[in-house]
Length: 447
Image 1 (cartoon, rainbow, N blue to C red):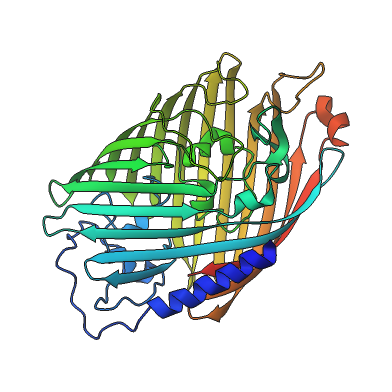
Image 2 (cartoon, one colour; image 1 turned 30 degrees about the vertical axis):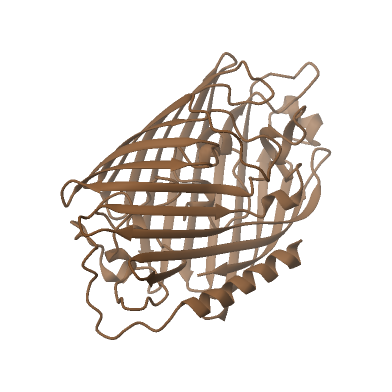
């Protein structure tokens, strides 16, 4: 499976080279792209592929939901700092801007102790986007994102302290990260320009991502180079694959307010299908980018029956996060995310905290780290400890080195090591209070 996934990435890289053409000399700014009130300095622009008939860096291209830099956009309708990288091939085809991006990881995973395991698997994503800006300033965008995760099997991969969802529809996954669905996002959005700094938008996805939490972890620059999912995933960003989302929002300059109706139930164990939509839950999010380096959000959600194994259970969720990204050195960057999430149900109130950071000191290297603290009542499925709330923690650190292998394709080799922390009451189940874990991985990235 890993060889197949890597070969697919190489083919994608070849396709990207065929699509990208030399930029036309002295191209003028496109007339259908509205001016922006806050253009980022050119020094912070991410490298992009040449676009026929256009010589415009990414930080001067407009986002899909308003007149701000395209680099502000992350997963779903979530925002990140304007100074963020925005990798992928960006190509003009007539009135449409097309973006292609792919990342495929081949991972060997080792988790220590009686609840640990080993496994090799492939993960990543393939993303395509097409956007058109009309003469009026209105914009339409279509986005599709696929994942190879289902091919790793319904049990996902070993990850100590991870909980959430199910592999068979009968028992919960514990100490394993569930695979994401084949279809991670199939969405469209339409934005109506009111003024140069004001717009309203409508976003719909099946699947899609409602207006809750920070960008999904595989889209956060502070940790996207790690192949390891956070144990706080189901507190902050597990709704990034939701089977039915409708979001309406208003953008004013560097502010965004939005409301979503969406299907509260998490995806089931059948990872290759698309489930019927049902707009039974609500989310609200307020986002603010006070500077080009900082992105803040606070959000709330009322979810109906999110758990397949406990269908009568509803929950209320809160989240708040800050993302800071800045250039580092001549060609590098540094990005940090601090986030808090909380779930409240008839089982009680469970908070989670995460701090993650990544630094690219030079073009080939990226170093990343994450620290988490979670209150979890799903770590023990049976016996006298079942249902008890335990405070657990995790720290992981890793690095990856990338080599260019084609014009728009890189090959990376990386590794990470993790320390897990559990209370003494759980020590006998884990073979100690500090079991370890590690991953070694290779990566192909279309850039």
